[in-house]
Image 1 (tube, rainbow, N blue to C red):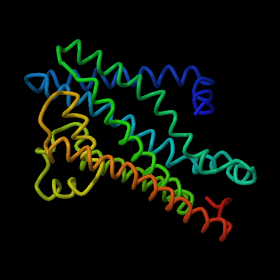
Image 2: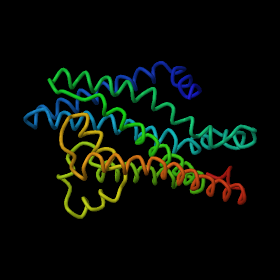
Image 3: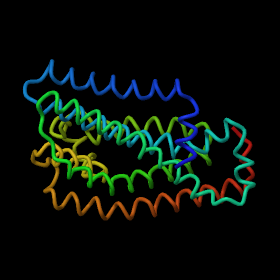
Image 4: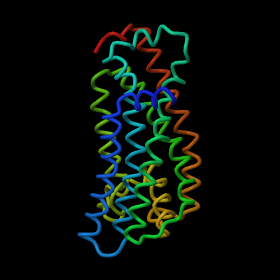
Length: 248
């Protein structure tokens, strides 16, 4: 985690641009919600969706794409020659989310306050098991990127945009067509997002009751990291046996 934060701070222009981008996105989403929808519900949905999107991006690209980034930089083979725990190094990359996500949360809450939207900070506790699930997803994608190389980038893009739609990042679940809604109910992340959004904005949940959603979130908060670890180890073993670390 410290390594990733130090690398981020070593590029002040990039850091300033990333910070400004979060501010611009928060202002844009809040303004769009205010212009096209009455009341504060859609503004709150958009801003809470931005918080979720930041966490998902750190998982998919910060963790899932990490080994591909090492390969592009020409350091992947050296990385595997060191005695360091490779899996722990990959997991540590998710620590960057605890740097950017609090900044995103703070900006979104400030915009909610500016628009007169009340919020419940206890919703932040729901993010903890959700982060655990995201870590597992990132580890699984890291293994797949290691195994399938450049195809892994396409897989991450497809995963990101599919989850944005199925998990209703920026709109109510009721807006989904019925077939997509059934698919959405099959994705465990949907329940975490629904529970977080409902608690943050003090609105009813859409998929299940809040207790049932939190129970599902806690269960998959254990299952998904274990599954992600297994996928990564299987992919790593196969690549090492076939000798494909140098291949793009």
